[in-house]
Image (tube, rainbow, N blue to C red; front, side):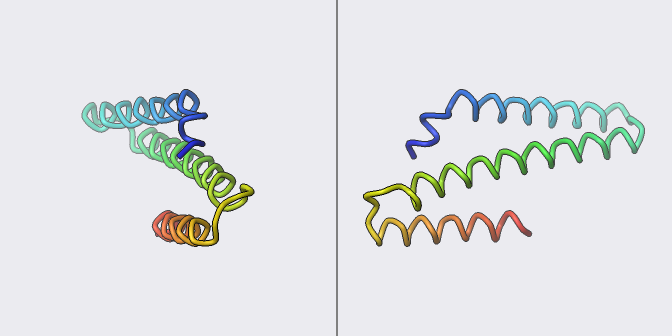
Length: 91
């Protein structure tokens, strides 16, 4: 996945930010934080994960479906991967 290698620093920064948010959520629950604060943290995590998923899907589509020189078989495989990811994302 060339798009992951090209954007590795940016992707890892987002993943690490999500990791920090999850750690903060764990701490909030352990410390019996206010329910509203916990809900806000969960919403922030969901937003961050959704943003990462959107970015990854966009990169995958551009690299494996829209790029010139990709065979029909490769495009079919990439399309199946995208559809599977979208279906699991929508659950």
